[in-house]
View 1 (spheres, rainbow, N blue to C red):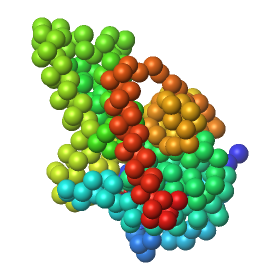
View 2: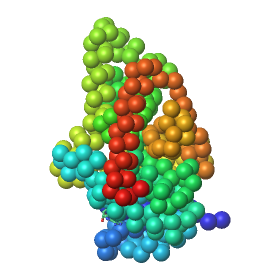
View 3: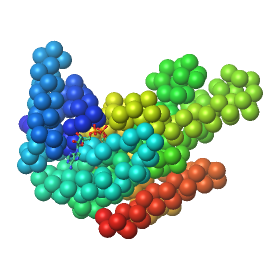
Length: 322
Ligand code: APR
């Protein structure tokens, strides 16, 4: 038997947390690639030297040579620049597209059978480019955005209601940008609609709606809220945790139902495009996209988000990346 091999492409803020989480959960042996000389080696040595204290029997190694990702089962990509205060995720397009193109060529060369989870922004565009350059089947190339956006949405609901976040189920659809669609109607506390609990709390439907509108708005802007506070760089703990949940679902064939940036083939009225939707994640990657019925208002918000992603894809075509 062999332990799974996890390649982390990008050893920055998110890459570091990814490596540590892979080790703590013993998901597999980790190889972290970065262009910065010695840095991934140093970071991984630091993590690996805690193996006795944290009790993990996996290797964690850094490299500046793509050949070391050879045979990886799963690649998690964070290479690229993060946002600076005031920047939108879309502002990163050209810089990160150039980086992702090179990353994709090397994944294709050294890990042709791997699954690829993309985290680099602008997410929907970078996943599309990764798929295009690798030529991998669509079920093996997907992006992390919805797990984090949904976790943020659930956290804000839990804090508002003063209830355990473990009992909150909340889902965010659409592209990973300001047009994302937090689904209020489906948000529940172990089956109890969140709106019902908010109405009980405030004794007033209008006030409950106002509170929920603010939660939705905070969810849409949550990444920017962290960027503004950090001053340097963007969120890294929560994106890493979210991608690890996805990698674990695949490596352990868990068939989890998670919001994933997945390839659509007619679902939600969308054809041949990546978009954030609930999907079954297991050993075959995105095994199934789950469709749910949307009312007119929800569909209009999703259409708005679809148009924003389409615009990104058109920009990539115009710039010659696709
Ligand atoms: N090949 C490999 N790695 C690269 C390349 C490249 N061509 N160019 C840059 N990198 C590396 C950087 O050296 C850096 O270590 O990518 C890493 C990115 O790390 P950070 O700058 O710390 O960014 P991080 O917070 O990890 O976010 C990475 O994820 O959420 C998105 O918007 C975010 O696009 C950003 C990405």
